[in-house]
Image (cartoon, rainbow, N blue to C red; front, side):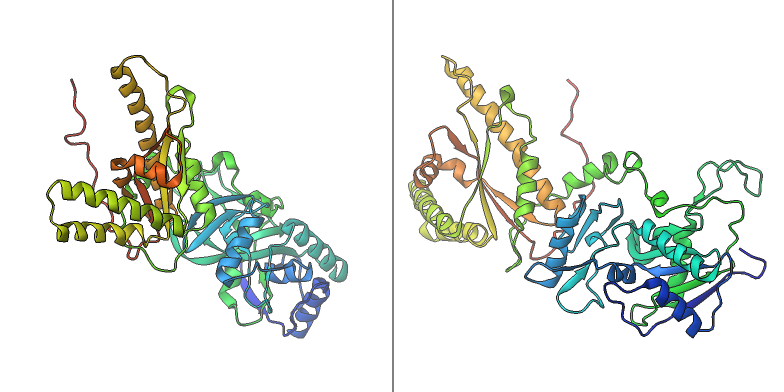
Length: 442
């Protein structure tokens, strides 16, 4: 910072940038209109939106609800999905940025389109810096900015995507603090701080594509790039989360019996959950699990047949008809109304065949246990995506009925049903977990 402090000067413009526009010319015109003569060391912050518009990074949104369409576009454009919940999709872009909806922007764009981030923000910043130098003879830094959220913090702030002509980081490691203690980890995100400062003097509705920051003292510091600010994947601890995150993910699985109407379970979420189920341990290196997605007509046909069998069993037990009706109604309230109904099972084809009943039973039990592990994986991942599940064990009591109705082979062993959907109300958090009574030394 200079002795006179830092000045932040907004540079609004009435011009709506279009594909092919010359941003250097627009910036020079805007500076002149506001009576600002650039000097060496000035830094111009440029909203990434106008860079994307000038570069023609406009794409059509997929059909459907605009919010869902923007998320789907972000998924298509992403290098990786980092996290997902019904209210947000966080992706890693091809640039390496981690952002909600991949930084894709549909505000102030017009029509049914959306804006991708600039293809190479550092190259865009360097080109604009070169154009300004050629026109003014001044050494002016450029920061391409965008609005990102932050882990563990509410609200959004501006960050630097592209940087040219100033340091991206100010590395203070190796120095000392006021008490003479060595600094070991201090790296100030200088370009991000400049980007955030620019947002102090503009709002989304002010038409301020440029902000000039004057008075930064960067003497002796090397110029950087926006890429300098991206944490290497090898240092990304958010991807692993640590043991506590794993424990919380498992504990988040709760049985949900009432689902929000009209909220579909995306196909990719089901696929991710089934893929996770397929990582369960299994006997002999097999992959015996199967998850049958019951369509509407098939679901009701199977539930009707199971209800007939269940009623007969309960009548044989001497249960009153009105009690049977209440039990069936409780079951139907979950299984017939859930947005998705899965029938899990294990295939016993690859089980070892032993001549005695003791080992045959043990072999079957191993496969069923493996199915239980797969069921847990499935439900944990669905819970992580914000969807509730209810595992209902009813098919285990009528496996022959299930196989007959669905024309399944005799080797298919059904393991209940899993109702899936968005919870009608968020399930309460699970209380403190303890191993009391579950773990014992022998």
